[in-house]
Length: 542
Image (cartoon, rainbow, N blue to C red; front, side, top):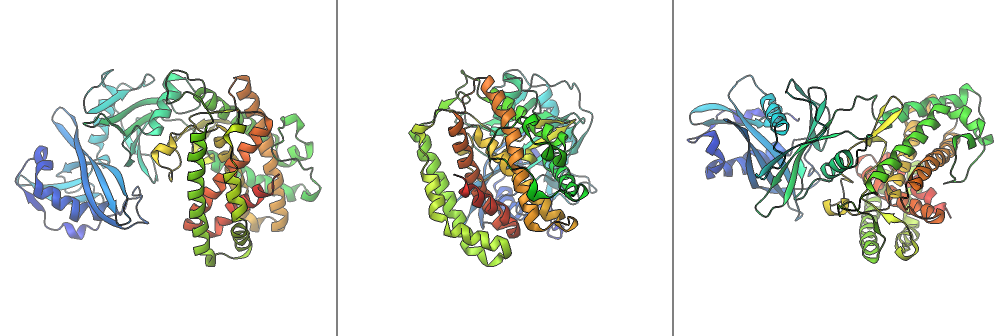
């Protein structure tokens, strides 16, 4: 977490009440919300309002997280912004008296009932992490209390041994328990079940999908109107060799080095049509020799695991949140409204920041602006009556960074959905090929990131490297599509006929590239060349 300026904490605020009654002290709450939390929260990595101007913070509600005499508070904070919107955050707090504890993580120096100490984020306290784990471990099968702890069927641990922070997460805070379980504390929260919790529990407990971390438990809060809010999810810790993004970057660096090692003339390599399905035996030997057989075997396996995820998500006929649905007019209206709003936002962003661009990125940005009417028309041309496939609950933010690699196999995680989407939109059933399109865009990113990061070490010209990358990309798509499509059709999941599949993939890839453009223009404009190149190449497809 970010360090707080402790110079403001020299003299403690004093309150003549107990810790158990502190939240009912009006003077404390006024000071805590207006003078302390605003400064603390805006410095945290998980705070998602950094690009907006904070107006004020309200305490929506609080609840006790306790075990016997040990009491902590969970705060639901409503952060209101000048731009007339708000976000909700979860912050558990603890009171500690040890002068040496959590020096960099203190929220407030305070005296409670003449006892000096500090209020801190409770997740920094091992005793709190132990309590949370034990409450999940000992949860009743049916919990009707306000703070609902749930124990998953596959939790094997019987006692707390140790805990540690998982690493540099941005939007949530994850803690590893006993080196076998991971508790993810959701920081930004919503007045509904978190999609990650819903999807994890459904895939793991109801469908027995093995290639995602097993659901082991959760904590949900039920308010006075019986609205459920997820604040924590516990899953299996999957031993792994890293995520598929880093794995792919290493593989691709070797692939591009092979061009010179084997004196390959990229302009003489055999081409392939975009979206042509390819069994590995159908990939030309020159391409296998260049890319390496193991890379194409990895892509085939990833296609199978992705299909198995969608098969699990598409084979439910009781739980309405997961039953497949046909395309309809309501979906078409929702889709177009959402995409046209997003597209206009991207147009404005590019127009306002085009002065930051240069070279190829600038050329592609100008082309993007010139093509704006054609791109808008592509989005408006969506016609649900021509589609025969089904919509399912999908991953929603599927890319190489959401996949773990373990001994050549793949494990899919993080089902929260696109961070920019509303929580309602994340739960809308989509064509499963939208996930596939997201992964294809991730392949494209990995290829270009490899060229950008290592291009100086390759002797080829940028033009030849880009040409080789686009060629390799088509083979990646072909091998993945073959194993994915075969697997999913054998399970009778309806993803439409061949022309429909290609149409949905192109549509979804364009949608994803436009989505990516916003992030890159705001965070790292030089990388905007990747989604701009993606948009350009997709628009050239018939």
